[in-house]
Image (cartoon, rainbow, N blue to C red; front, top):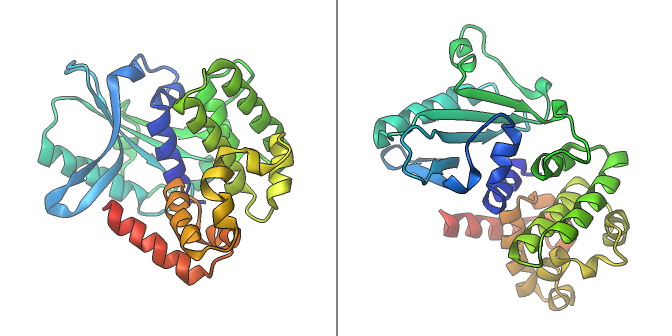
Length: 269
């Protein structure tokens, strides 16, 4: 599962998610735009940036990094990219860095490096496993906790989130997008399960009823039409589904999936 892609998609759909995770933050989500920023001369891009839009020079901008795998070089990369971005753009707003881990054991600290930076109030490390959640917890926090939920817990949590989304959010693109994300998370977590098994976990009679299935596995694409299936690869890649899962669900050779994923990456760059 490409968890960073999933998180960035969540941030696009629900920008207030960052501020729900930063429970003490007074910043209103409506004042921020989630985007990616390219540092052109050095050919790299910050994928998760929240930029203030209200003209308040005291409002910070946030650089967000999602890290679900151990990475010895993470903090070298994060702070190098941050300060190169500051050098090129010289933004008027103070900077903040947020790093999201599934659990504390994934973090890799480098002895003798970065301690002073990591201890600044400007840097926040979030360990999802340590976030306490109840039925009254912020919706966004409960949604991201679904990603790390155990197999025993995930079905009940997914159903609860689906019911809350349908009850509290008027039918709209936002409602569709959130339901789509919940369904996608289930597919990511259980790539070996059949469509019917996942439908049962979600509390629907048939996965064909869900938006995720209808848009990715539409009837025409299930009749063996190679071109239709190849078109579906782009959407699944954009959602963060790993290539092996795409190949299995679309019944395509892995090499073809890799080729289509590369085309998608080239068209998006």
